[in-house]
Length: 396
Ligand SMILES: *Cc1c(COP(=O)(O)O)cnc(C)c1O
Image (tube, rainbow, N blue to C red; front, top):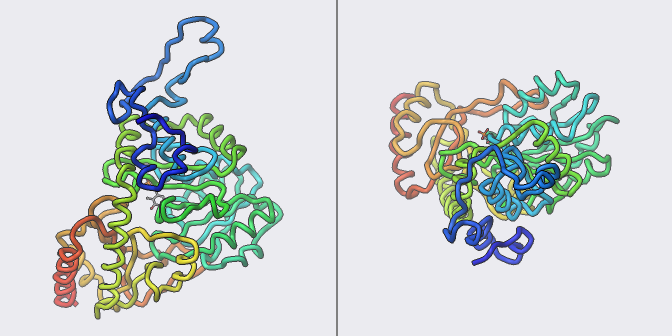
């Protein structure tokens, strides 16, 4: 076992790359995993070295061996020019906006975007003089009609994490690049394993590593990867200027989670599809929103561009009262009710995004519930939902 650079890891397949990335036994006292290094001050031996900051790590804010190991793993996953790590997925969404945009610029954002990204755009970005407008996530190549002379970026998220509307990323990239605008994508749902965003021309790609990358609901983390060396420089400069840094324990936990990312995702994809199909056949369910289902309106785009589906989807129930929905959700034993997703455990929660969309209206014929399928046995999950639907019918 020796150390591999992200480039050298390129000749291996996903699972092998995930096992090897960021490890260097020669630098880890022989142990399998990199040590958790904590530190602010780095000591130098000579005045000349100090003046030139001649050291592998110059100061704690510029990273340390634990953080570097995770960066290597993320770089090998993303295949970009370089990445930065952030203490939350939300900061990974906002950092490329701060890095790439200036006062007077305009950005296009899909109406289905992760809500805190919208709140950042409408609040802080607006205050900094950056104008946002929202577009129909299904617009595809027609996004070209929405460009203004000062449009410098298009934000994308495919599929949206509540309504699962698929976006035509290649068409949006073509429209943006023809006008010298950059494309920023929140790729948390698919992860780089199921959507190779840089290969499709996405300039800044985001993962809320809190979800599948870390995978155990025990750490908050975000990653941003840049496609070109120039974009990486822009991103890294913003990261350094703002003093963004993740804790070494969080880097260690995320790296530990990343070893099983492919194994977990593949298992969760299989379970997710089985649960989605089972739910679609239930009389209580009007529609399942999941691009991996052949009946989903986004299926053809998903099939063309993505190599897999994660295990997050939503359902629209047939019209039923709020009390019945609460009886259903509160009776579930294996589905926890809470925000976030991508861990080993299943989740279910109610959502209603109709109130905060501005470019389009999202009308569902009944209440909407988002499911995350974890690593439990699917037969147990089906039994749990089956029992829950009984409670729903009793309360209806
Ligand atoms: C959760 C999430 C984020 C933010 O991640 P946090 O680590 O919770 O801040 C960003 N985008 C999407 C799509 C998410 O689901």
